[in-house]
Length: 252
Image (cartoon, rainbow, N blue to C red; front, side, top):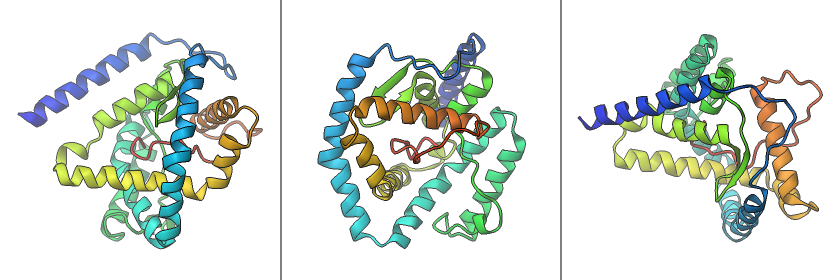
């Protein structure tokens, strides 16, 4: 009964999103809609303080104290858990080939790769097709919406925000996991984020602490990176300086 209620709630969320996307109109590329800039800047400063006081020192301690092979195994495990959700999104985007590729990767890494700790699938040619429900909404024609910076989560667009919420609600593995398993899923996701912060520390620090206007630069980098990803690399004149440091490890 509990699982049936969960799935009915998720279907209601999906139906609402479908209605919103059906009413959406495309918007001009290259624009920046930031009607909440004043509030966003306040949150950005709070996020910088949180990064300076918590995220950066924790990620540094994790990166320096845990050997890279162990960190890679944890990140691989967390990434593997995101594949079923990516498969669903690929199907919703009418990209069955991507769904098959991610499904093949999940099968190989879950079995041969010992639950995803190791990544033999990449060596076998089954690389990950990284996608999320935000991209599904993009494919369906939903507008990007305004730029918003959230506490802890960092930069997003309104479309990405809806996509992240749906990804969490529709994660097919969560209803099958008990409370301890869900804690493991969350914990490994957090560690994956800490590892990403550590590996990109120089680039992230240069944006947050060395730029003249870290808010404007973070906003531009996020929007350029996100739009480039959604375009599936069709924009040949774009250079992505680094992977999005604010990317939610559990949203993939």
